[in-house]
Image (cartoon, rainbow, N blue to C red; front, top):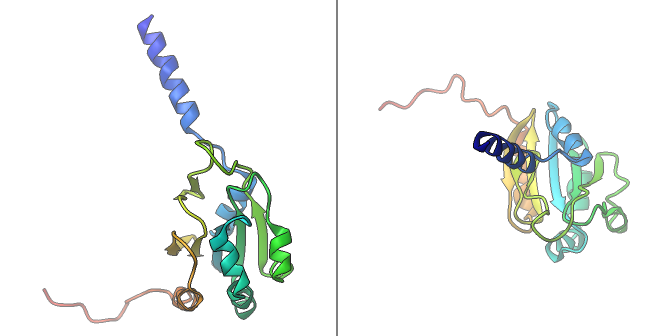
Length: 170
């Protein structure tokens, strides 16, 4: 009987620790595998840091200056709202290289998501830069500085190879 209890307990623990990906997470997970450069921006319209990024026009300029880059604005901790109306106010929503998504999860409490696309999520805004399925840069805490993001985008366009360079001697 105690073996049965242990097995049932183990099954319950396993079931509660597994979390199905939301449709937004599935879409992002597929998109970042593309050979193209992808920017994943996790944000929420109620977040003052996220609002500050929009107000200064940095995101609109970044999106317009990089038409070959795919931008994914994923609203999280917003009870399923996608924030499209706010992105529209700042002329971001209708840009051809922008996709707007929403995680359905709650804003508060123990049940809010703590990871997205296999990456930890503890603060918004959070911005990740991917190329060919590889994470190139992760800005996981606070407002992005757009001059830094611009440099990260430029750096991410390279192959990051040191082939043919001389090796250092030990």
